[in-house]
Amino acid sequence: EAIELRGLTIEARSPLISQPNLVKNGFVERVERGFGRFITPADIEKSLAISTTQLLSRTGRIRIDYAIGGDRIQMLGQMGLCTPLVYLDGVRISMNGTSLDAIAPVASLEAAEVYRSATEAPLRYGGGLGGCGIIVLWTRAR
Image (cartoon, rainbow, N blue to C red; front, side, top):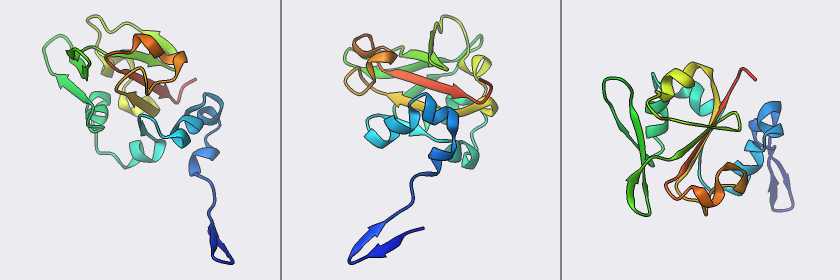
């Protein structure tokens, strides 16, 4: 609730504070800094996305090439379309021939972060290696 004090309005902090895992892993702090695009638990709950790739594509930064044998995630980097770095619960994963939806189904997601370049992303998630972008996924089962 907001409390008005002599022309100032003080508002309660984000409901993300009540998510201990997201506070602990730094997600809440990164949301407050504002670099990148963030998908919160509330966003996931409200979403009608049937897959993680569909949810991520709504950030406007990701392009999905749907194909038999696995969908390919691409972002527009400095050299055109390329494959971003992907982290799952803080650990970098290889996307070679693997479907993101199989690794992290949308029903298991707690939150997600999408950075279009190394300058947006925290150093711990690829920093200088993320010329094509970085996706960080957080699951509920940790």
